[in-house]
Length: 431
Image: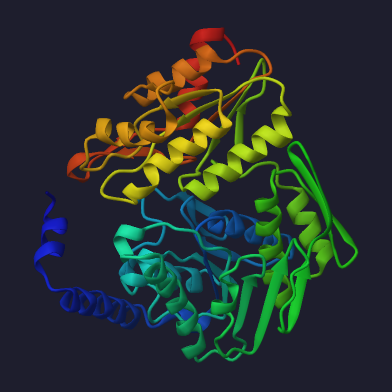
């Protein structure tokens, strides 16, 4: 057991909470409360946060703004970008305040932050003055860490409470009206409340950004907002929702829809999110989906819009260890069984758990026909060897991550994308 985990077990929760709060306070003091000098947008939800940040960056840059951002994919200040290799979406309190200070020094206009429930639990959002907070969606995740779904929701709500307490004047809330939990996130007192919807949902709020005339064909989607027609080259209704959130943020800064349209239509792909690696003779896609809800959305999209009953859907999946949401493992297997003709269950990020045990728990839902291949490279190799013309191989769980987390806090360098390209070349000789 790592020292950090051991200390968590023996130190009373109130002392741990005080430690996290104190560290956040000291970080803010040391870096002179930088969030007071920059527009800060916090984005939270179970899924879609990184994509919303990526889309919002593009819109603001198209409008001439200088952007800083932190997401599970990267750290960005202006044109300087660095991969997020911490394997923590939301950095610690000192790193976060330091980053904010650098963004202020570089004269960035806006800071976009992916806010996680674990980050909120550890007070990483504290002493950051937000201008806007966005709620995307809520489905069960991190249940072991929080104790229940209600506690998970309460953690997310603390971000909006922090917004309400912020001393900034132009405070706004943006919510996904299509999510049943949205009302809880609208109850806070702010200057303006904005909702976005793909289903024509209504609420007594200041403004609604609605996508109309939605058409999804393969990898592309079209929709209209206030008569402006948008084309998205990244697939799925969930990406239309993500785009609507980005558009809603842009409207808070009076960025015209034409600029949002221009920026979004330039996006060809989002790294590790429904990213197509191989196109012929069959398609290979990698995605970050790691919850039952997101996995089902990915499989459904591929089955309904890409395959259309032609060819097989071959999946490679696993689940994280370290006690993370053990309940979901058989459900992931059941979803794979529902949509996929060939299932390969493999290692993902075992942390301190036995990866074989995790695989067995997934297979309970996936059924006896599922192949169990511990080595992730071998699992990907097997999937490629099973695929024929017209098939699709979907590899989920890691997306653009560049390491596998194992026992003792160690990380092994890894890239699903790189391995797919290497193994494909070995089998077929060229890409």
